[in-house]
Image (cartoon, rainbow, N blue to C red; front, top):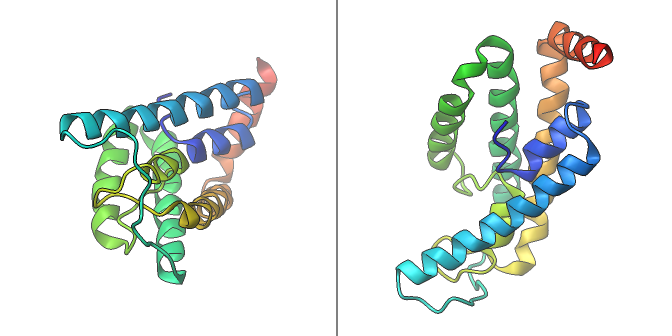
Length: 167
């Protein structure tokens, strides 16, 4: 799978579909990729490469928005994987586009992106002091989505466990 998001990798680790070692490597790559993206964006717009955000993004509304955004993202991925695996990329793209508009936080929904946004003082930035709340909300939303998926699609969870046991 295309793991661009530590929350997604964590869920696949919790589902025992990837190992802790693989999850760790994904997270390292995700963080480096997100930080490289910030540097590239700064270079493209002739901005100083190294910045620290001063954009305040705090409060319950922002946290709830991130939990909702990440919940929806994980739910979209897991249920689309069950129904039509080839449609996951399109489903994720459409969901993230929609979540940008229906959440107060503009749907970061990705801990690596959240960390990287702490290093840009552009309109997309987030003050480093607010990063932990965003990441906590994202992980909470992801875990709740995993639980809801197990309720909505218990056969899929059992089928995955049987497939892993057969390997």
